[in-house]
Image 1: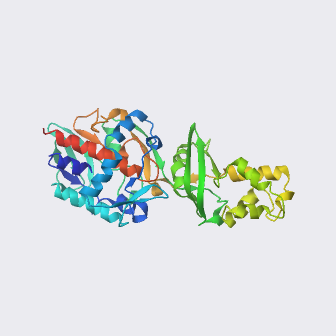
Image 2: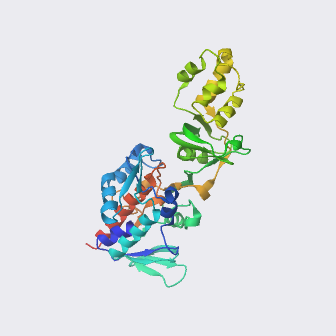
Image 3: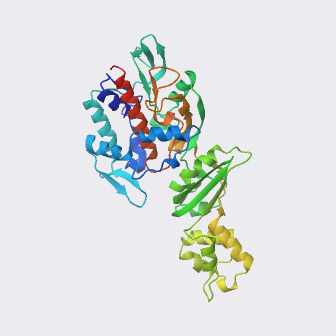
Length: 392
């Protein structure tokens, strides 16, 4: 997006890509479908240690409706909303159409694409910027846009080069951490439920931080995954080992009062029968075990303490968690270059003229659902337009 915007604005643009093809995170996103944007935007769901007001200014610089129109008009992609999740996908459900469409548009705009051109360093020079490559002669440029991503999913080519470069050039880089990553438990008390999925509300608290998300939850052999888990995982990954984060789950849409009413029912209905209508049976049995309630026990015979334990387990169940899957499976990198050190209108560094930083390098990320692509599109466009304007 940065290269497209720079070339469109009139800059002679060269796109250096370390992999043979580029856009590998696009290709693996959304299970190969590419959740290109959210259907609706809630700015408060972004996470940053920088100024939330600065983040909002950046996000608002390219309204969501205009981004949708860009992909439909310039790339010829028809976008379809997955109504149950509020995500936008290309109607073809092919991430490759998004990646290939962006590369094709860049070519039409005059961008020179250089694959397998690994950058190893960059520094200010009398003419602007000197870019050192792993092989070949250095390049000279009037301006440099760094859009290298963070540390997440290293197999796609992300190795933290941009973060190291920004720090070496004097930028404040807030501590980085895996975000939107599955959680693990060793031993895994619910490992036997691997494959069971449902909609839950999950809350994580630790080190003065908290996050709550409602959405899909999936038991795995190693722990827990699904959108709701990923959206709160950053609280767990940032917690120090001495005081690990506390994670609790409300397993259904019913609150405490509603469950108390269900469990007060008279007649021969059993505890398992009461749960089975609202939960997968395997999970219902596991939760009854956690609450120390016999599955076949009639509701009419539940003691007050049994009813209280079961209600607590259903509404605020502690989720044993000892770790996470790290950057290997994280969808995005948390932390990064402080937003205070870039111009929110142009993404230009306040430390170095002609240096522009965008995307995952910056101290901001959003939840599952297209937010992080939106952040990449917005910041890349702003940087590209600013570079294009330098020649004017």
